[in-house]
Image (cartoon, rainbow, N blue to C red; front, side, top):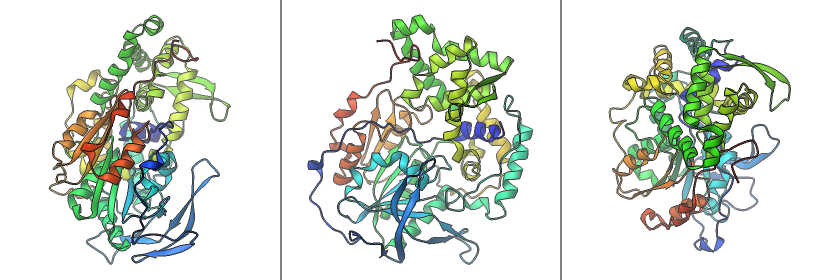
Length: 512
C-alpha cells in the first residue's frame, strides 16, 4: 500500500487516460490521394537530417513494460523555463519525429496527450494504430509537454503509508509539501501550465521552419489544442478533439456529476436484459450499497496479485471503490464488468474487485506522482471551483473539491491569461469525437465547443466511453478529415454500428 495515496489522488484528479480499443477498420489504401513530396520530406534510409534549425538523428523510443521500441528521429530542443526571462533556467524538452509512411506533405501531425501529466512519447504505443491512415502522408511530432516524461518531469517522491479510507487531508497536505520541495530543486512549478506549453509548441514549429500543424488532442490534450489554436491560429491546419473539454470548464467541478450520469446510463441497461436483471436486480443500487458498506467498515482483503501471483493484502474502502469504478467506466469493455465485480463483493468475494484495482492502478502509475497536474489545475481551475451540494449523494462525493483545495493551498500558482476561458473560434476545420457514455467528458462538451467554430463537426460514438479515436472506423474518418479538410462532408455512417458491450452475467461473459 506504499503508493496508495498517490494512486488514489491520480485516479480522482486525472481528467483522462488513453482508453482506445484495439479493434478498428482496416484503412482502404485506394482512398489515399496521389503521393506528393513536400519540403519536409525525409529521404529513405537516412540516419539523420535537418529541418529548420533542428538536427535530427535516428533513435529508438522505449515502451513501458516491453522490450519493444519505436523507431524514430530525435533532436535536442531547449526552451526557457520562464519565457519572460530567456536568459534564466532552460528546459530540454523530449522531442521525437516519426516519419510519414509514404510521402511527406507540408503539414505535421502533433499528438497532444491527456492527463494532465501524460507524456506523448510514453503514450504513443497505446494509440499509434489510431493514426495509421492519417500518418501515411504526414510526419508525426511527439513532444513531451513540459513537466512530463522526458521534459523535466515534475515527479514527486514516493509517499508514505496513508489513510486512504478517509483520504486524510492532513497526510495529503504533507505529501504535497514534500512533492513541492522535491520538484522545486529543479523547476519553478508556476511555469508548467497549458499556455506556457502552447508557447513551447509554437517555438518548436518555428524551429522546424514553420510547417502547418494538424493538432490531435485527447482529453486534457484538447485543452492544449484549443489554447494553441486561440493563440497561434496561423500555425494550425486542422484540429481533432477526442473527448474534449471546453475552455470554460473547471476541471474537477463536474467529475462527480459526469460519473454518476455515465454509471446510471450504463448500468441501467441491465433493466433491458432479463438475464441481467435476474442476476443483479439493480446494479446501480448494488454499487451504492457496496459503497455504504465500505464506508462503514473498510475491508482488508487477501488475494492473489494478478501480475505477480503472490498473495497480498490490501485495503478496500469507499475511495478505492470510487476510483476503480470511475476508471472502469472509461471503456465499455471494463464497464461491463462492474455489475459482476460489485455483486461478488456484496457476497463477500472481494478478490475479483481487488485484482482489477491492481491492474488499474498499475496503468495510472505515470500520473500518480506528477506535480504537473497541480501546476495546471491550481493555476487554471482551482479558484473557479464551486462545490455542488448534489455531490454529497454521488459516488465521488466532494472528494475532488477537498483534494484540489488542500493541494492548491500549497502549490505555487502560475498565471492564467485573461481570455483563457473564452472559447476557441474561427474557420479552422475541427473534428470532434465523443463517447456516448464518457464518464468525464460527455458529448455535451463537444456540442458546446462546436457552437463557436465555423467548420466543426461532432461525431458521437454510441455506447462508447472516453478516448474513442481508435475505435472502429474512426481512424479512417480522421485520416479522411486531414486529407480533405471537410468535416461536414465526411460519411460517418460507419459510426452508426457502434454500441455498448453487453454486461457480464458471470465470468464467462454476457448472456447468450
